[in-house]
Length: 234
Image 1 (cartoon, rainbow, N blue to C red):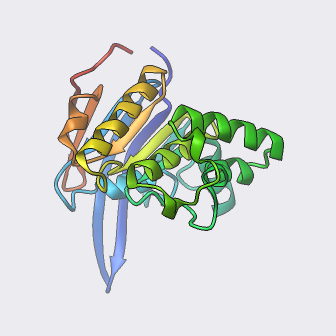
Image 2 (cartoon, rainbow, N blue to C red):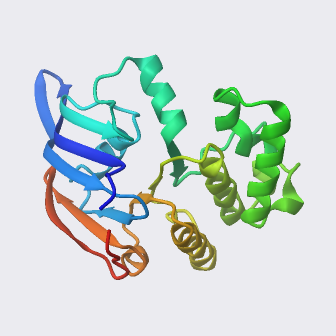
Image 3 (cartoon, rainbow, N blue to C red):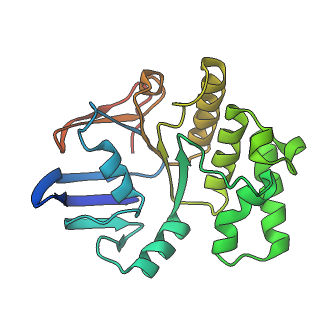
C-alpha cells in the first residue's frame, strides 16, 4: 500500500464567538491515498467546510496533526503554510473565484506565477491545460464573457497548473445547470482516471456514484467512512 498523501490525526477545531467556544471538529482522523476520489458529505453545520479549510491549509487546527505529502503542516507560520498550499494543493470553488480582470490564460497561470515559474513555461502549461478542458479557443476572454460551466473549466485548469498532490473542491457543481454539471463531473472522472487525487465537499449525490470513497460527517466527527461506487484497492 502506498503512503497516504494526507493524514489527519485527532484534528480538533474550535472558534471563539462572543466568549463562547464552538467546537466544530472533534477529533477527526483519516488517511487519503493517491488516486482516491473522496466525497465528504453531511448535513449543514456538520463541519464539512471547516474540514475542507483545514485540508486546504486555509485554516489551521486548534489541536492535532495534519501531514500533507509527509510534512506536518498543522502549525506552520503563514508564509510556510502558503508555500505548502501552493506547492501541494489545487482548489476548485463553487463560485469559481476567478480574477475578473485577467484572461482565461492568465487565470490558469496564477498559481504558477506565485510559484515563481518563468513566463514561457507559464504560457505553455496554461495553453495546454486550457486545451485539456476544452477552452483553447477562449484564451484571451475574460470570465464575464464565459458561461458558468466554462468558468468552472478555467478553475479546474488553474487547479491543475502546479501539478498538485491533491485537488480540493467545495460544491464544484453547485452553481451549474444540470447539463454543465454533468460535463464538469465528466471532467472529474477523466482526472481521476489519470490518477489524480480528488477530495470534494458536496451535496451532489451524483458524485457518490462516481467516487471511490465517501466520508460522512455529523456534529464534527466522522460518522461513516465507506467505499464509494467506484472503490478500488490501494
